[in-house]
Image 1 (cartoon, rainbow, N blue to C red):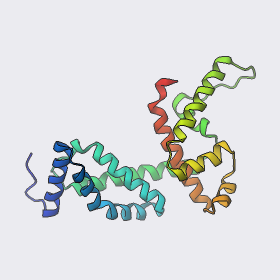
Image 2 (cartoon, rainbow, N blue to C red):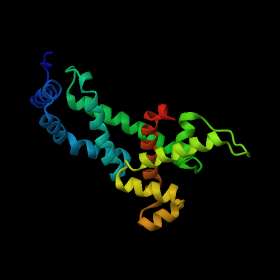
Image 3 (tube, one colour):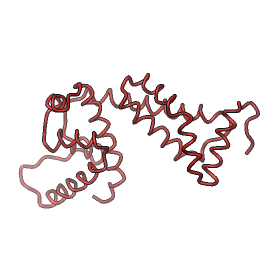
Image 4 (cartoon, rainbow, N blue to C red):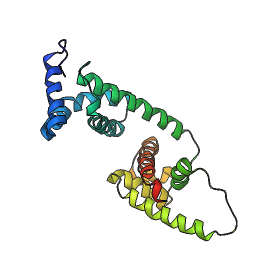
Length: 203
């Protein structure tokens, strides 16, 4: 695969790093690609989200998606162009989901996650032994998945869904703006749902 003759020296440098990462598994090449664009990507996403926490998380997500799909990159355009396109599209999708979720009524974590994957369960006045077992299995799985969250997300989820604190109570307890609490809980729920989908065959 030949490098695009219209590439700048910087684009040619990135292309060689991509090849080293792909063909040799060179971890230093991955690190250098990240170092080259981490700051500029972060500030782009900060401008788009106006939230430092979201911008930081989305920056890591963008590199993660790019590196997982590095085999799809071709030198028809610069690596930086490809990377920033991935980041922008991911951010737009995140902002769309965030806006939709923050304007919807409050609901429990279990209803949120399992409702998306398995559909709404029909309520019954009589206790169902099988449903009780499934519920316990789901609760254990949910606890295991919550433990994978970043510390600040894990704390928020525990306060909201295990201690059943309101958004306002959490905001006061952590000295955070109410909007930040809601936004970060959205991010935590979204991560949990993605992990849950990978475990759907176990339930």
